[in-house]
Image 1 (tube, one colour):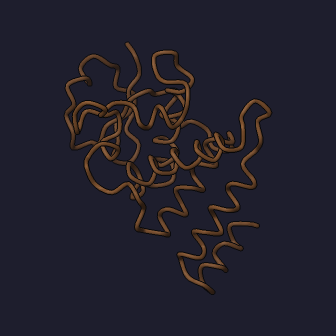
Image 2 (image 1 turned 90 degrees about the vertical axis):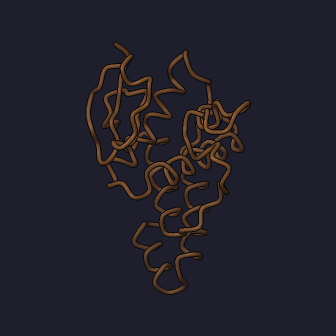
Amino acid sequence: MTWGGVAMVDSLLGTRAAAIVVSLVAMVVLPADPGVAGEKRDADLDCLALNIYFEARSEPLIGQHAVGHVVINRVEDSQFPPSVCQVVRQGGEVARHRCQFSWWCDGRSDKPVDWAAWRDSRKVAWEVLSGAAKDPTRGALWYHAIDAQPEWQAELVKDRQIGRHIFYHRP
């Protein structure tokens, strides 16, 4: 099904139905890596989509791709956990607000409520995981919102701003 088809479902049946269709389509069309079991692929898609939803749903498409790619860049870096879900859920085990991505341990619900944004986040997650979207961050491993001033930023090299996020690399 094309995204035009999803738009048609959205117009005929509503956003909730379109979100379900997108979820099903993304699970079916996500390229199968022979070394990755189906359940792990589905979990990776869900974890990445949740991170994009909560961190960047109001960003332009390039900003959503950028947030998704930071997760993938971390998975590929030995300093971070080896799976998408482990990267997204890293930190916060001991204290609230001490996780890598603030939404994960802020004490609020982690269930999407904006179905159109959730549909878009799943599409973006699929694009990032499948390699269909290029990395606009040039391999960044960290980012923060432009209105935040995290202590760690002084130790890293500021690379670029995409949307309302600033992306960083190691020195």
